[in-house]
Image (cartoon, rainbow, N blue to C red; front, side):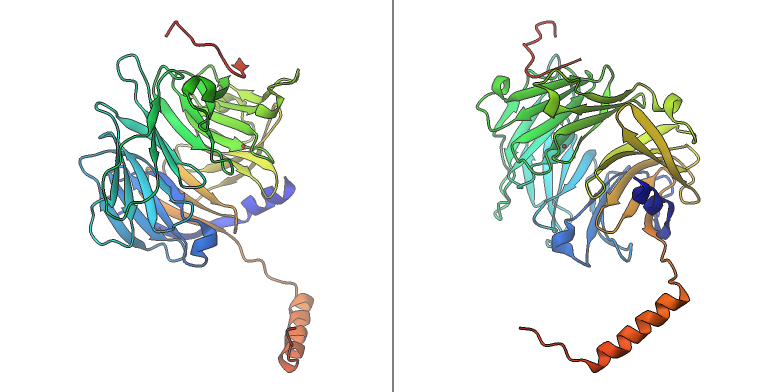
Amino acid sequence: MERLEEQFSDLHVAKRSAMKDTMTYILDIDMSSPAEAQNNQTFAILCSDKSIRLYNKETMTCLQEYNVHPVVPSGIRFSHSNINLLFSACSDGTVKLWDARVSGSEASQIFNGYPSNVFISFDISCNDLVVCAGTEKEDEDSFLVFWDARYSSNGDSKEPLGIYSESHNDDVTQVRFHPTNQSLVATGSTDGLVNVFDISEDNEDDALRYTCNSDSSVSIVGWAGKDYNQVYCLTHDEGFCWWDLAQMDTDETITLCKVEDMREKAVGCTVDYLVGGLYHDKTNSMFLVAGSHAGDIHLLSCESDKITYLKSLGGGHSATVRSFYWCVDDNSMLTGGEDAELLLWKLKTKDLAPEKRDSMKMVSSVQQRVRVHNSKSYSTKPKKNNSK
């Protein structure tokens, strides 16, 4: 954890990009795959003015904008295998696919939901084969809707493969597929439950593998752990829950950490809200990003029943931070918020000691003369709740 703390302390605002309209909030950020994008990585932001914008990470210049008025988008996700394809869930009961290679502002493909569906969450499986979206509560039901995610060049609209309708009884606020297992998906709801499904099963009853109860309204869900066999959630009242699913069939407790209100628990900084969480696989550590309404950003380390304040970043934002994206490959971070500012945080370049610089010069001069020859209250499978 010391190395992660050092990395965070060296972050500084490398570049910033301001929205033209100072009343525009940045609500969500997602990044294209670094393996495919290499040095030309693209990220997307979702704005409160109902627009989606694509940016070049290195230059922080806007490449393209999609205006989806009067529809309200509720999330953005890049394809895992194609940097040009971007998905968004929308309040009109559709998931839209945008192709950056196609000119114009119309979606390249539309995934239709059922009548009265209002999608407020969604995700794409790690193999890009399945899209799943969660709905607001409709009468007495909430739905998870599934589609075949494969891109059809003819642009025809796609109809659902099927739905789950029995496992949540309130708004489905989060859908998160497992990072490496295309069959597993975790969902969170304002009913307080975090469910994990195996969608390779034939029906919803068999698909529901685990249910964890946060005892609060769930706002964010994610996967953690060395083998991604853990799930965590943040709640709308700034709580945090973290479970180890590998302990489900043992006598050990699965609850690694549960904090009802991080505003009261955090010591060393003023936490007004939680922005999000992240499992940092390179350091095998779980951390939370929190903030103050003045724009300060705080990093909190999470361990079993222990929350540790690490560092704060100030001088970047001047208002509430709504979203962040941590780039694990180069330990940079993108943040956006209610001050209409989009910031890229990078590590400071550390000066080498004089003797180290001299040593590098000598090695370099030798190399010039030598030619090198090449030769991720709970239950494993709850009974149906008839008291919905």
